[in-house]
Image (cartoon, rainbow, N blue to C red; front, side, top):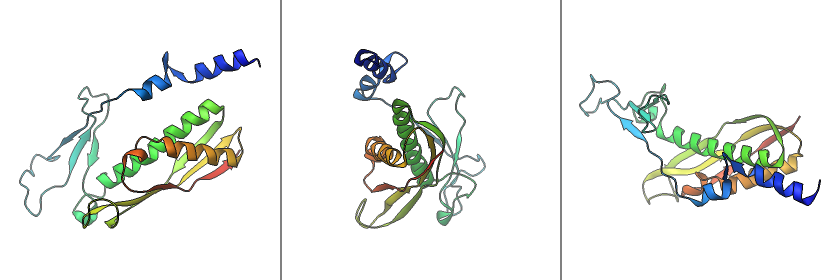
Length: 185
């Protein structure tokens, strides 16, 4: 492949919808979120038995995105069948790492057969966050990836690059680690 063909291929791989990736990440982007309480109109008075249930959304009321059922962790009186903020934070970290990893794999021509992550986070009073207050102290992402077209060492390097470039991981004030497992199919 000539260097001109290789350059054109790389330039096209870095474009999405006619827009160059570097232009996308160089700009500021704004996102919206909506939290609605009470989820149950019958429970509106915040006393000791108040409902911790809420409906979470993207701020887009068009109906294109489903509402996310939110609550507090069960240890704080929440409903175990609904997502709590700590789980949503872990999901954001996990999905951001995955999406960044998939973008890197796509650019490198590595076929990802499957990707699954069982992230875990620790909420405690500790060295991270506001002194003396409960906060996330650590998150550990544990992606299991099956790939074709790269070695396990290449995939580890891709995880390291994904970790370094994940927008959400770069936005938190506690350590985010990853313990990746790779299967070369």
